[in-house]
Amino acid sequence: MSTSSKQLRVRETSPLRRTLTDVRHGLLGLHKALIVAEQLTFERIYGRIDSTGQLLQLVMNDPWFTWLHPLSNLVVRIDELLDDGRSLTVDDVAVLLAEVRGLIRPSELGDGFERSYYEALQRAPEVVMAHCEMKKLLSLPAV
Image (cartoon, rainbow, N blue to C red; front, side):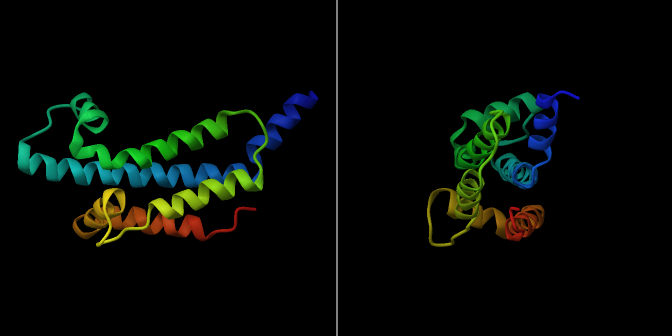
């Protein structure tokens, strides 16, 4: 086995990379639960969304779903860091985990993401379950 293959395998299995990958998967689960919750509410008001493509367009472009963009952007940043090819540092992971913790802090009195997140937690059990899963992931040590 060549040295570069060994380095690649080490990079793929490093505790920091596993932590970031696990958090990414948790965020994707939370993101999906939030989209489903928002879709149900949207459809009660505006009518049925006919296709996955239409839902995707709404999530990307409709003001109703705009509050989800910070979560989407955080997943993209994690993907970029994981795909970067360089070794992750404790600081890289710590910064992203702090951002995740800060983002998924619901607030009844807040605005933007934190307020909309609070409201989604009040009406959708699946969002509560995904939130709890994220809290568990964020409480685990990174290394």
